[in-house]
Length: 459
Ligand code: TRP
Image 1 (cartoon, helix red, strand yellow):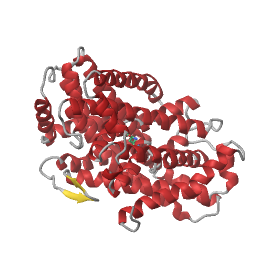
Image 2 (cartoon, rainbow, N blue to C red; image 1 turned 180 degrees about the horizontal axis):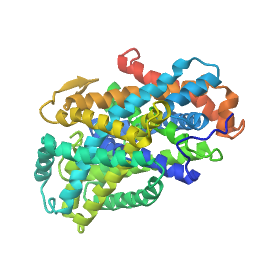
Image 3 (cartoon, rainbow, N blue to C red; image 1 turned 90 degrees about the vertical axis):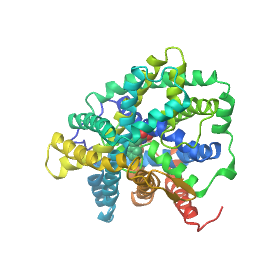
Image 4 (cartoon, protein in one colour; image 1 turned 45 degrees about the vertical axis):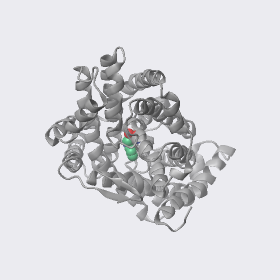
């Protein structure tokens, strides 16, 4: 009953899964989003809440998501339906798969636009645009890009085509090899950037901003954003990790792989923060600058360091690759479902999803120029209208709810025997620890964060 195989194929090894899942997890979330939301939310205390969420919410849910995926071996919708049936539960659980598919579609629509910014920056850095440039110069270069919908559309189109091509060939071919080389390279370039940041006279200030918590700066909105980011950065709550789990060989340890993926993801985010904030402070820039933060800071470093044109170009190339390996995991659940249920072939399914995501991406493109509007969310002013709404709706609401449902399903609605069998550790201490976390700690944590936002509980 539990030795099913996926019709979409299987990873060649546990390492291949780790690479693919890390490829999904490490992306714009780590290098673009983590620094800018940390800057907007006051630093240290926000980072601490995020790290706590990774440990008590992220890792247990990642394990739940992988185990559900591997047990069902189908697209998230069909996996949830099948497991609910096998565990004699109501078919309504498949809603987790549906909402994940919608979340993935909404996320790819804006993710691709931001990846387009990174693509544009590859060419700018390579052509030496940033050499010797001032902070004001860097910001005006950024503003002129985001206020030009036609250029944004061109880059967004290129990224969406790249993503669709990989998904239509099947996530296995090519992906494993690419991640194997690119991840270590990205890591090394981040170290180079941290090295540069160490030589500014504000490295200590940057570290203090990241790591010394000031809890008075922590708003209810910031707590939700930190938790939402734990989901976003680990690719949790929408079925991406579930579908990747469905290609995982039965012999692999879910616990070890999940911990490794979460560790690598966290390390990349922290390195990005350590590179960026010293540069922000050394140049008198605004930590709360918003989504443009890395695009307004890193070019300054590249414009002033020896070999900056080379390093800078390489950095944005790697950022595009990181975004690419993440983007494909956002489309994969929907594509697998179309192949399973609608009888379309993979190429058509991927093309259809690619076109839909591309079209909807226009909403994000316009958010930075003519459709921009401001609104307040939980005590913060948001300036990019629909983009911010999409971000809040997906990362801060849909992903935590999806993850909550997966934790509750694995902890309360699957039999203890099923989860124990799938995790393959017997009734060990680690199993019991996980079981306790998904049953009590994780659901309570997610619910408390939502409630405090609604003002029901006041901290
Ligand atoms: N985790 C990726 C990042 O940090 C984005 C991503 C890929 C994602 N797949 C996902 C986010 C699934 C949520 C759900 O850039």
